[in-house]
Image 1 (cartoon, helix red, strand yellow):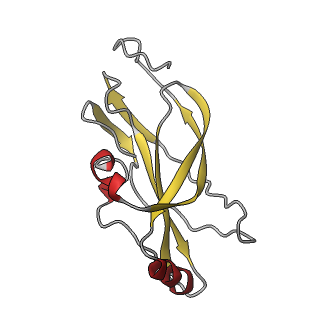
Image 2 (cartoon, rainbow, N blue to C red; image 1 turned 60 degrees about the vertical axis):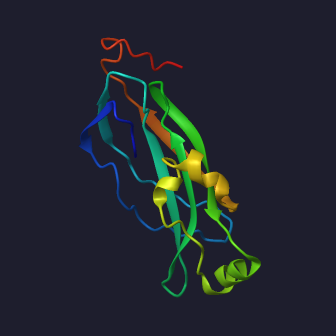
Amino acid sequence: VEWGKSWSFLEGEFAGQTQYSHAPLHGHDIAWNHPIDIHLASASMQGWPRIILQLWNLDDYGRTNLLGYGFTHLPTSAGYHEMVVTCWRPCRTICDEIKAFFLGATTQLTDDSIVFGKAWDSRHQLVTKASGQVRLRITVIQRFFGDQHVDGSS
């Protein structure tokens, strides 16, 4: 989870690796079931928090391969929300894609800030390929936003 300069981290885990999951058949949903509990403070809507994802695959030979990147801003209103994050991965030449298919050597970013931070400057130069979706179920709790004259109801 990342946020702008007007936000302060109070407690929780804002970065880390979760667990591996297994789909019974290729193309089926995979349950993630990982709680995210983070407490932030702000007096401004600017730099609203966002979740940035990296998806990896553990193949039958124990190799980890990049499946995709994605991000979305967290909801600005309190309550329960269901969100979909569309993921993508960089792709290069046909030879690289064949190598990725047979050897599991997928192309990955050398600078992860391109996913969001430098996206407007750098990502338009990338050739990417859609790599699936992540469905998130998030509950947002807001406290003292009215006292700070911050309207997060949009």
